[in-house]
Each structure stands twice: as C-alpha cells, then as structure tokens.
Image 1 (spheres, one colour):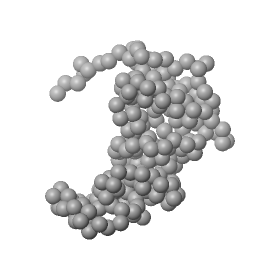
Image 2 (tube, helix red, strand yellow):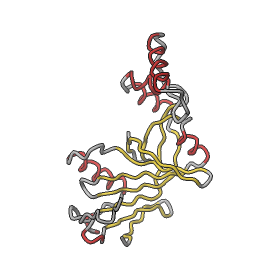
Image 3 (spheres, helix red, strand yellow):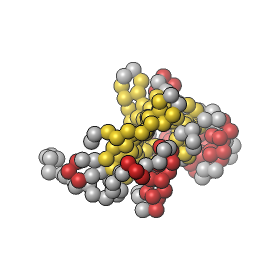
Image 4 (cartoon, rainbow, N blue to C red):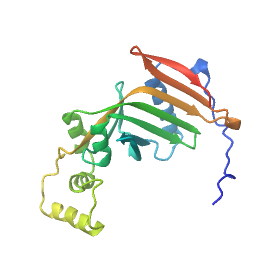
Length: 208
C-alpha cells in the first residue's frame, strides 16, 4: 500500500501569541469547550501512553474530569496500564481532533485519586458498566467471550452487590508540560508549549 499520496492542507485555525492565556489548564478548557460546541466525535477520547522496562505502550481512554491539579480517567488497576503506572508513574495524554486540525499533548506524573472520589464516579455509572468492571479481568487472557458473558450473567443472577472493587478506580495525571498544536498550511504548524519551571508555568513557541 502506497501512502505517500495522502496529503492534507491544514487551514482551520491560528495560534496567535497575543491570544494565549497564562494557564494551560484554562487554555485546555477553552479548546475542549469549543470542540464540544463543534460536535467533535468522541471529544474526550485520549491516547494514554505509559512505559515500563523501556517498552512503551498506548491505548485510548476517556477523560472524565479536569481540575486545577490535572486530568482524571478511570481503569482497572490490575490492567497492563495499571501495572506499568505502578512501575513507572510518568505518562503522556494525547488528544487529536481532526475536525479542528488540533492536537494536545500532556506530560506528567500519575497518581491514584481518593477511594471516595473513585466510589462517587463508579456509583453513577450504568449498572451494566459497573458489573463489567467487576467481572472482567482487564488485560488478562480469557478462554472465550462466551465464558465472560456467562460470568456476567451469573453475577447478575446471584444478585451480588454492585460496589466498586478495590482493583478499579481513578488516576490523575498532574501535568508538567502541555503542548497545543494547530495545523497550518504547508506544514508550518503552530506549536505552543507550557512547562513548569520553579512551580510557575512558562510559555514558549516550538518550531513545527
């Protein structure tokens, strides 16, 4: 398959220095809210990259909260990503919104959120999703899908309590660098990076 013919001229936006806020969290919220208004598909989907033993891995997860501290998502702590975070707590989040020709990269350190906050989110999920989180041994080898579906059906028949298991909960990525990328014509894309220096955000423009 020849891919060199796939080319696209970006022309939907500009990143002007005089329009940039001091806070990258504020900037992220501006872009995110605009993406919601523009009905970007799966707007809160992001690639989470982690690594352990110098071997990186990546997968799509869903952003569930943004605070002044960082970016929150939920998963099984015993999954591959959870095991890698336990060994190396640094990770990267990547949003790509092709409808807007925009990308955001967020680097930082991950930590588990409180049990109370994980409980609060878990309890407001649909019951079927909660049961799946309880029963599914995420990232582990299973015999078949039929077996997994039967285990879920058995759990439902037993009327077992649907409460958050201790192996499932939230992580917060606390950023130390956030880069905003806006596609521009002729690959002269705009790149603005915020990074922490002495507990203060500094802003700088990067070459495309």
